[in-house]
Amino acid sequence: MNAATYPLTLLFDGTCPVCTLEMDHLRERDAAGHLNLIDFTAPGFDPAPWGSTLEAMNAEIHGYTADGSAVRGLAALRLAYAAVDLGWVLKPTGIGPLRPLFDMGYRGFARHRRTISRLAAPLIDAVRRHRARRTLHRMASCRDGACAMRHNEMEEGGAS
Image 1 (cartoon, rainbow, N blue to C red):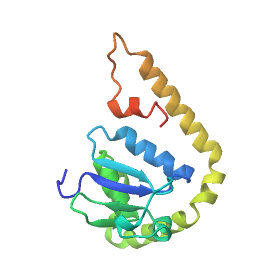
Image 2 (cartoon, one colour; image 1 turned 120 degrees about the vertical axis):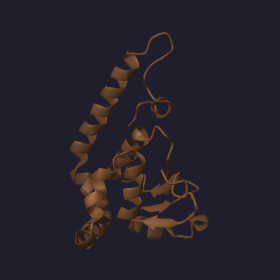
Image 3 (cartoon, rainbow, N blue to C red; image 1 turned 180 degrees about the vertical axis):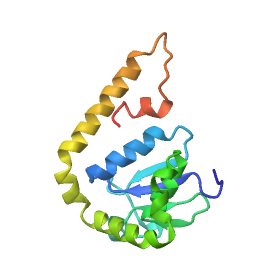
Image 4 (cartoon, helix red, strand yellow; image 1 turned 30 degrees about the vertical axis):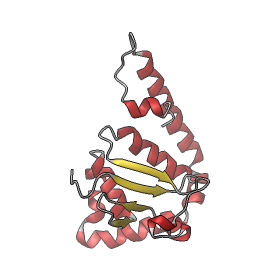
């Protein structure tokens, strides 16, 4: 991991079910602590220190590398996925002639994410139930105060 990049701070829309589902997934996989996930819709959040506005944050995900560089949209997500050893998943989105198409698709998703979330609600709920069952299964395998769960899974209470 590049020390100038990580930890990577992602500012995301906590009112968007698709967005929170994805951030929960990244959080669950982030055993090395390379990500700092911040809900910009949380009460008291101030975008000013980040050099942006809530309107801009609503338009696309914002990321800030360890050296303070801003990255947005798919570039931020590519770094986040790389941080949790899933960089291969989004690698095609950064390939030369395909990149503008993927960027346009991401902007379309970002603009319509709340509608997409409503339409995908049954799928989102099913994924959350599956993750909760998986976490309960992991917790059941704990013995004598020790188990294989990572620390961040216990902090999240298995909600991801």
